[in-house]
Length: 452
View 1 (cartoon, one colour):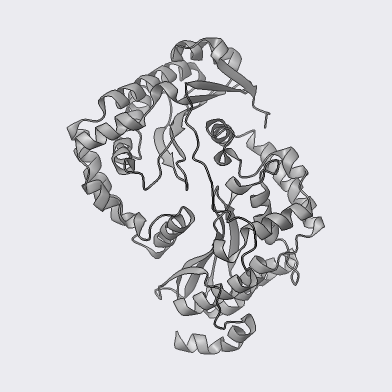
View 2 (tube, rainbow, N blue to C red):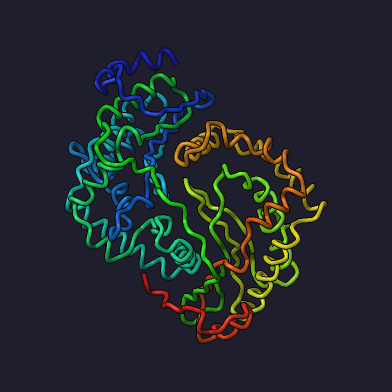
């Protein structure tokens, strides 16, 4: 490693690696097993921070940053990465925008020069803005043809109606069409500030070298006067009664079905007990109740699951399955009954012991490689979790007991106030869905699948 660093010292000076008062939060794990460096540069802000009327702008900004800087065109960026045998991609989440890639350690300094240019020096050329608008519009149109993708988009918007978590990552067609270059510059300035930056990675490099580079980025992106975008000020409000939304799409032979509610934060006292119980109800095991009853016993759907999605604020817990149209009314009635039984009775001692042992025994696999540890750090840093939290699963699960688990489930679940979404053909199913849920047809809101 010493010889490698000596070979790139001239580029270190060119990149400006000097001591800096801009201390970017940097975590890098040395791993010399392969001559590769994996790098993530993230900001603690994403789709949930899109301004009103400009949904999708954070994702758009991230994509545009890859399409030209003040010193490189998109073609030049792509060619430079190809010549290094390196990669650099961008991912948008609700509360994070992440640039991630890898490079041979011998080419690290050249790679960091490109990444720094992308992060600190974007140009947002009008020609590329027009191209990207067309591409996003095509992707949004394509998503209408994929029922699972479409159902997820509608579900997030329905569950979090009026809350930042309901904003779609890609945005809405008309709002994307209305974006101006000045809007992109403003959103970039709000997101890419020293206080929001994270650099997390692993590989065949020295942590001090990566940290010095990260601080140089912080120096080029000092804090502005705006509010820290990491703030999602209010928790989503749970519905006060059951609400049912039917997404009407013609000629469906299969439906997308969601039951759900506002979830828990990782650090909420009830999270680990409910997480353990969820493993019994609809977690990743083929022996989970939903999978057993919906798929194994009845063959109504290839899969049936329940799971959390996490955020800085409580986000969501949902049960999801995708039965054939003919089986949908029965599947709805079954899942509804199972949720009520789960809330009222909890899990058995046998289920508790199996779930507890299974989750504790598998917990170590969530951080047994550098790549997994990097992803855990990204979650901890972007969601405001304590350092090392993702390693605490086994310890926290070991503290549970069945009585506490069932009490937590009873307090958390709200079957009578869950939102329910069905994506299918309304003329074939609406009346049957109403009967299955024991509600009047007038209580079921129907919207066309083309609505944004």
